Image (cartoon, rainbow, N blue to C red; front, side, top):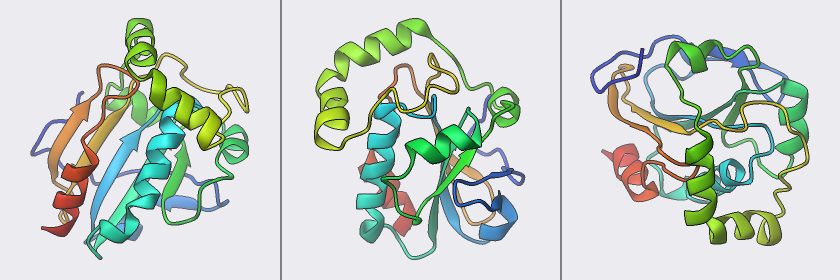
Length: 179
């Protein structure tokens, strides 16, 4: 089932790159951005995480960010070394949540995102150093999904991306985090 505004997200438990197991229960009572990403070393995905981390000071105090990748934990740990621990980065190797929430795959969406996002791709690789070949575990043709969840676990906004760079705008995430 696709996530819709008004749905309740009350269960998410996956291994984290820090070696722990993240459970949504641990952030109960906080707002959150839950993002589903592509494969473990996707430069677009890691650039978005970098931008999220760089905006941490702009978020409200009662706000957490969770990044979920469809890949092995080991490959995600290799490709996530440039990120600090201010965001939860999780591996859904078996695609449990990806399948549960109908996170889509699209070769055309990847192709289109690569064309539209060419300069983002170059920035991710050459400026930020996110090598797309670090570890190729996961859904190469996956498309992102962003979900804004309130303190009660109720979805306030959701975006199923049509391309690899199609996310809820960061300005909207910041506004949501502060309200």
